[in-house]
Length: 483
Image (cartoon, rainbow, N blue to C red):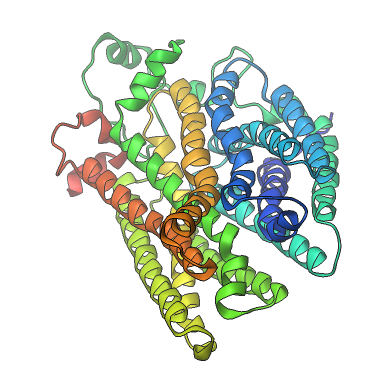
């Protein structure tokens, strides 16, 4: 077996694998017009195709979080990657809608494992200075770059007359190559627990026996010193129902999980209808629409990720949430600007030319910048709000499931359903329906801003006096003294 350094493992399996799994979503969004020509697809049906893998991720995420407590990580990762790559190849060879739905579902079922394992592995192997960067790279960057590469390759190949299947065949080949690297990797390097089944963080971070005994003996809230990535671990097995109850009763976890999902809902929705929207409203050719999507969203997202990765005190919940309150409000303002540009272009029509394209792109830039700065940090706060290490592992899977369903699955599906409704019930034409679809996507920025604000109110202990003190330790002793 090959023993690799942590940084090499990160680039291979926390960046490379998620990136080429996310490739699938971008390739699907760029080929829906070609796929529609090959069969009778409704707006909702094509939206369901884009959402089916995310529905699979939703179904499986909490399951994978629980299974990672029981089965070695490498075993699960190898099985998952094998099934994923095989179904990508099957998807590329099918034209029947039900076969494509099924392949997409299996792609999502196995992709969910990767998104649960990666942040847990990062928590174990990254230090405080590299954790925000690695979280951003593993989450929003790998998904964005992978989706962008998929959009670019699929968009250009279909624009030049190639079959939609070509881009998916390329994806499958890369995933099989990564599978070979995974098989050759030392299992202990991929593990997120020790041989005795206890997470390594538990051995490193447990306080003295007497301190732990005092904690277990009573229900009194405790203030943890330092960052919220250093939990006091309780080494016992809790029933699944008890773990769910602990997470449901944690308002900080619930609200940050919803904010995380709302951010990805906006990104997934924009990616899915961008090309058709700009082709219809501005009469762009497909290649220009693809390039504009990659440039505007890529530069905007990169600026936000750079800003969040260089933020100091990223493991201090209060400081982080103050920052996130600003970034989500910035995204909501960008959504308003973008929607204004879309409505003006719809009203003026072809006579306006490209006059309203600039404010629309400025709005998109602001949205992507704000969301890019938000997603990695909000995930750190969400995971760090769970004190018990084993429950945190299950909570990571559950938060990914929430994100996959409300974010990645509903992002393509909801705007397509809205378009179907306004066309059927209000006799909207295609252009008006696309603007309505964009509006339904941009509403997610408002939800993310509200969730970030409510989460901040919990941490500072105002506006929700019923929250127990046990949710305040994320601030740290110094932060409490400062308050």
